[in-house]
Amino acid sequence: MERVLFLGHTGENGELGRAALEALHAAAGLAEELGCAFDAGLVGADVQKAANNIGSCGASSFFAVSGVDFAEARYGSDVLAAEALCRKSGATIVIAAGTSRWMRVLAGAALRLGGRIDTHATALGAGQGAVSISRWYYRQRMEAQLSRAVRPWIIVLEPGSAPAWQGEEKAAALVDVPVEVTDAAKRTSFAGYRAPQASEQTIRPDAELLFVAGAGWTKKQADGNIHIEEASKLILDFMHKSNASLGSSKSLVDLQGEGQAVLPFLTHLNQIGQTGATPRHAKGFATCCHGEEPHVVGWRFINERRAVNTNPNCGWAQGKADVLYVADAFAVMAKVNELLS
Image 1 (tube, rainbow, N blue to C red):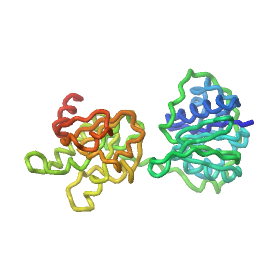
Image 2: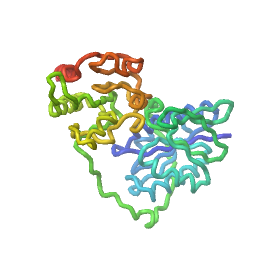
Image 3: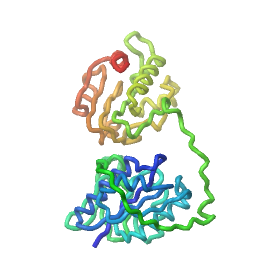
Image 4: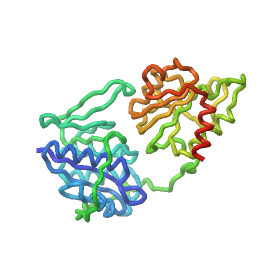
């Protein structure tokens, strides 16, 4: 008989993040499909608040590894916590969110447990009692279904692949799992965060909207001139007012290497498409980009797609966008910013 364990860690506010709640939803669903029990294992400085938030999720037991040694991400202590929770639960299937904290340590935990791990899973299933996962390959062009006989099997779920668990708060009885953190496991120390100001952050995975800028922003406009400063102001104004996530086509990012004018706030981290990221947002809005396949493949998991382009025959018009606005993006975004103001 299988046994499922949801593995989560708290954030700065002592609660579980959205990605963790998505993994919890997937774990609870898989356990129900298998007709087996499932446990919840939590890691953090103090996990009682997080446990109470998910107290009605149906977990048989709530296991906790907590204390100052587990407040921040660190491989040495986190791998011990994950191993201890898996052993305490006796779970054969372990499900966790693909956060940066878990992605660093769960492969090591699988090795210590004598199990196996698969990351970037996008769906879970239990057809005919056999657990399987879905995973995308070749820049999300091919989907595969995988199953393993080795146990324990740790499955890391890609954020955005499942709905977040929702339920009422309920007091949860925590079972503390003692973990001895040796000096060797504490050789790495947490010094602090270094991050850009919120107003300067352009990559926002949790944003509802993905705004993508194409190379057309840096080309000659109707008056025969290039308007980089105007383009930068229009785009950044929209980002600040909408809290959208900013993406870019490869053609725009690569212009810098060709010595052409570029938008100064874009890097390869913003690149969307076959050679870039494949984000998950509820809506996507492409401006001044061609909409050809190498770029559009990065939009595979965008639910609603809209684009603005002066060319009515661009790639977006070939069934790749739900709505195409044949218009000047400069004029459109100026009006949008005016409305948002």
